[in-house]
Image (cartoon, rainbow, N blue to C red; front, side, top):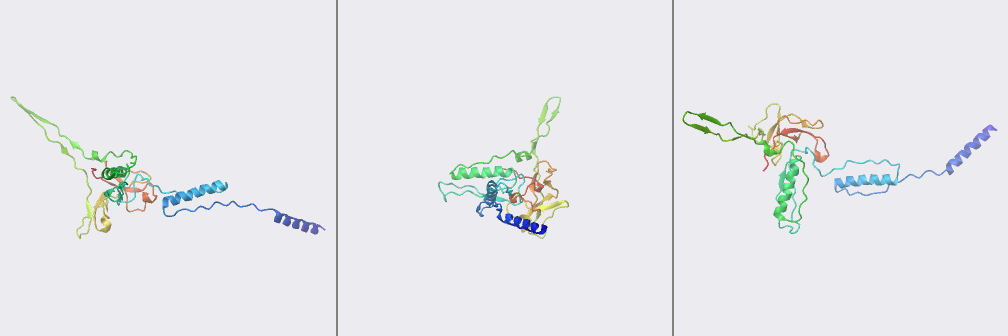
Length: 264
């Protein structure tokens, strides 16, 4: 008798389970994204995640870090990238702006890009360019790297007359880097503790294609710890030997210290 009651209860439970409707799973809306532009594709995917969260409250969105066009404190590679300058919209094809190179080093690259846009506008006209808001340059502007020192005035006094002679001011030469590399059997090499890299202020590919480079101290600057250059006036340039590149999404890339060129 007990066995019959047990079997009857099990059958009733199975029937109730089959009749109970299963909860409907929430479906996220389908969104197609254009894959021709990496930044727009990333932003579209993030927007799709937000839309799915709004449709299905229990959904946990996954957001991607999207690339932006803003330069970072220390720019990516040791090569130079041509900065495109706008052409006149009123007379297309009649006026062309010269292609100028800017060192990919923040904030100097910001000032250089603004100067290129203004020069193109002055030459070809058209729509007035929107210039970027550049932060102050730190260390101080490159124009302060050349200093003028004046030697003291010497005065000779005699009984009958006095003569005063003044020497002309002398200009302290700006430090430079020793050359290295090049397509020559007698190409110069760097001394111990220094490495040969491409001059970041000159076009071309440097020692990588048998062109001449410059010797810099093999000592890290920048990075997560924010190491400063030991020599006052030097700037931190991205180390070409690592894979960290700001334009590819890298942050706080390590670099090497170089002497900046005189602007103007």
